Image (cartoon, rainbow, N blue to C red; front, side, top):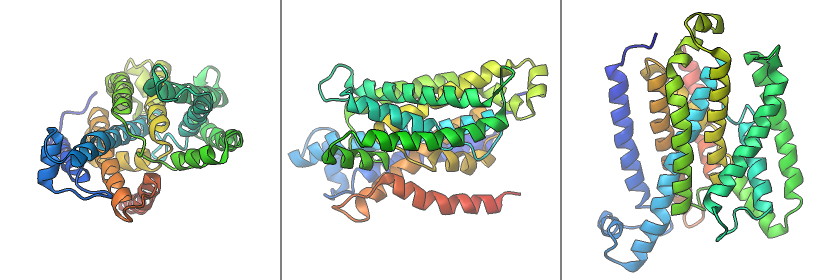
Length: 335
């Protein structure tokens, strides 16, 4: 049932991994202060100019690693949701998951959960985001439930409605903040890696590992679901259980990413499309999506910091500017 491993997908994984390392290295060079490769190399080991050490080890390296984890998490979440719904347009944003996570995170921030020095501050906001995403998932699931089964067609429509509702709730919550906090929240909602810290990297790594640990074992079930739910059931797949676990795991990945960096669109939609032809099955698709999403967001963040330095633009705007034309090209290239 599982497609045979492909040498092409192994080569693609190797190329993406090399590209990711190269992009992380390049992102350490550029920003409001440009550093030479020698300065970056010395700073990584704590030697050389003190300012360069601070910039590299406390600012740029956590930011690059966080970007890789967020991009990977969003891309895998999109790939899983597309497999779950059998719809290539599915992604965390369209299904209301990102909106629910943003509402949960914003409410948690207003309640002081992410305050510096608070216990578990790095883990608290992603957890609040997941709870918000969970509420959105339950509402979407209730709207899409027919006779105790999740109807894949209704799921997408229900997600669009919940996404619109989440946008309204976000505007409502923003009205409770003062002008300075509202401005920072709006910038966060547009997508930014500016708040990257070693603690945030560790917290997101835990959430990403948990989400991947739940989704990778479902790869064979996703391959069967691509043949249709009835065929998958005859092959021994517990369809409803698989759908619920996949939906929750994809929501966990998207929620942790949104809680950390705000809403970043197009990664979950574009990357699975870009790597699908190189993946013989969903196991390879999930792995390639993670590596592709990680590379894309690290590159987008480097552009957001460098294009108009020392000013910084939203990384969400960069992914939209890159992603929309690229997605149209991919659509045109589809047979």
